[in-house]
Amino acid sequence: MSCRAALAVVVPLLLLVGAVGCGGGSDGRTVEKAEFVHQANNLCAKIGREIAAAGATIIRKSKDPTSAKAQTEITGKVLVPSFEKELQQLRALDAPSGEEPQVERVMTALNETVTRLRTAPPIETNSSFKENHPYRPGEEIAAAYGLTSCGHP
Image (tube, rainbow, N blue to C red; front, side, top):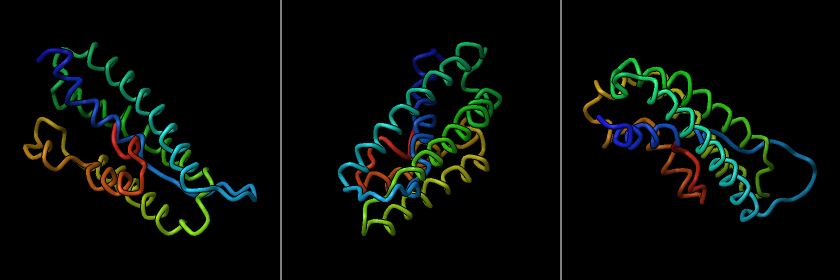
């Protein structure tokens, strides 16, 4: 498998990291939903770029980027820590007034993504991965709220 093809498989996993959390740093000011969405999407996009770079490094060093070993390394060393970082940074943002339940729903979904990534089999042994990747539920919930850069690598 070429590096480009391997990236096509790995980058979506890595983007998941971008969507793992939101809703808690209160400095006393009111945040509008549009501002929150903008800040969160910027944060998630930045983490997504970090995931892609780290994943590409692992792929370049691997003899077989689609192997269970390479995929496990990407998940454990890149995706899980990156999504945890994303969730932590999202939670540090102030949730828009009146939107706290919706933001918490996104955070919960993204946290569940991390749990699924920790327990999902490596990609090559998971035949339904493309249809049922571990971050799809979090990605969909985040996108429905407007966080289109969050919830996926």
